[in-house]
Every structure is written in C-alpha cells, then in structure tokens.
Length: 80
Image 1 (cartoon, rainbow, N blue to C red):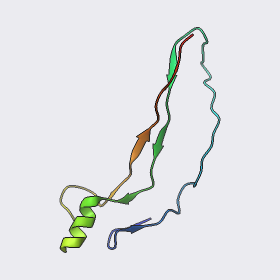
Image 2 (cartoon, one colour; image 1 turned 60 degrees about the vertical axis):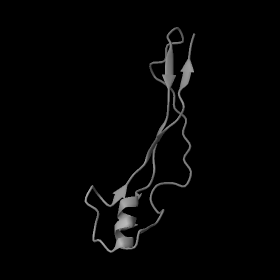
Image 3 (cartoon, one colour; image 1 turned 180 degrees about the horizontal axis):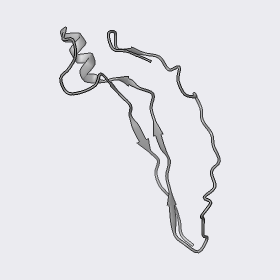
Image 4 (tube, rainbow, N blue to C red; image 1 turned 120 degrees about the vertical axis):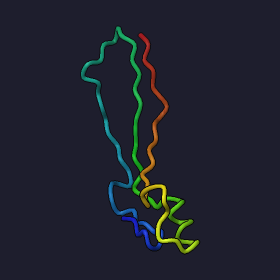
C-alpha cells in the first residue's frame, strides 16, 4: 500500500474500525491481574525516505523505506 517513489500510501488494508470482546479464560477473581491492548498502524513511508526523495537520493542508508508504528494502551489493573 506504499509507493516509495512518490511517498504516498493508501489505507485499503485492515478495517477502519475494530471492536472485540475478550474474556480471560484463566481469570481468577482472587488473583491480581492487568490487561492492555496492542495495535499496529498500516505501513507508511519512513521520514528518511521522504528526505531522500526531496534531496534526489535513490534511497536512504539506514533501513527500509516503510515503517509500521505500534501502540500500547494504558494498562487495566485488577485487584481483588
């Protein structure tokens, strides 16, 4: 979904919105626990690739032309 020659990308993979219900199969109400969510962004162009294109270089030296950001939610703590 990323065009490394122009720096553009399309958001045509995955879902625009995602909702899910999850239950911990080993949940013990007498035991402390914490939960969090991890998410992945669609692949996008790396900033160094955009800089290389603006300066007329074929590709930057430090890595791939695209990245996929990751995020974590704040934890949800359970205390009996």
